[in-house]
Amino acid sequence: MSRNNANAEMNRETSLLHAGYRHDPVTKAVSVPIYQSTAYELDGDLEKIADIYNVREDGFTYSRIINPTTRILEKRFAAVEGASDALAVASGQSATFLAIANLCSGTPGDNVVASKHLYGNTWNLLFNTFKRLGIEARPADPRDVTSFERMLDDRTIAMFGETFSNPCPVPLPVPALVESVSGAGFLLL
Figure 1 (cartoon, rainbow, N blue to C red):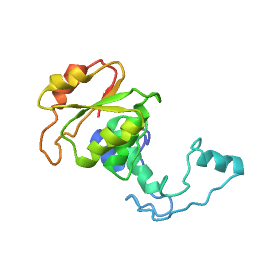
Figure 2 (tube, helix red, strand yellow; figure 1 turned 90 degrees about the horizontal axis):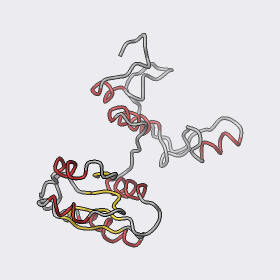
Figure 3 (cartoon, rainbow, N blue to C red; figure 1 turned 60 degrees about the horizontal axis):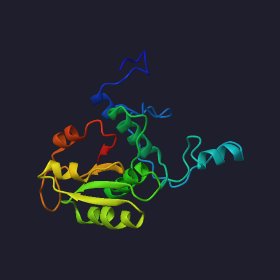
Figure 4 (tube, rainbow, N blue to C red; figure 1 turned 45 degrees about the horizontal axis):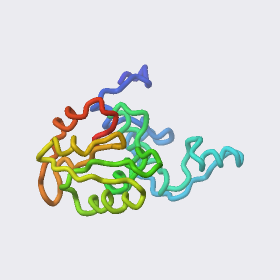
């Protein structure tokens, strides 16, 4: 990246190392610090502070919600993936829950076609927890791409699988699944 153009696009490799953080303005340190604070002082009037807490304006409130170190990680992932933003969460289960919950229409009947070879807690989340929320999980066999295709309907919001499942090491045929549903209007998670 040119020093003369701080807004120039970074290539993927550079983004992995530098997106979201240039240097500390006080110390000029270029490594991202690990912020251990749990609370942050907020400047401004009550309306501005309310906007920060209600996520209408950027700002740090409480580390469990947003943290400067985590925010830099999110900006780097967004830059590398060419996305407008990213969200870092504490676990794969959190990521799976948020991804699927945010794809739902909010009415019962949405479904996810999922590999039948999944980590036990992922299986429980998809086939038990989501069921209580009105989201159906339909099992498919990653050894047979057509088993995924047969489960799809107009309420399918995603196909889901682990690239290499645990504890049963059955690989998910990602290229074949992508090809079989290209243009279908839902995601492969």
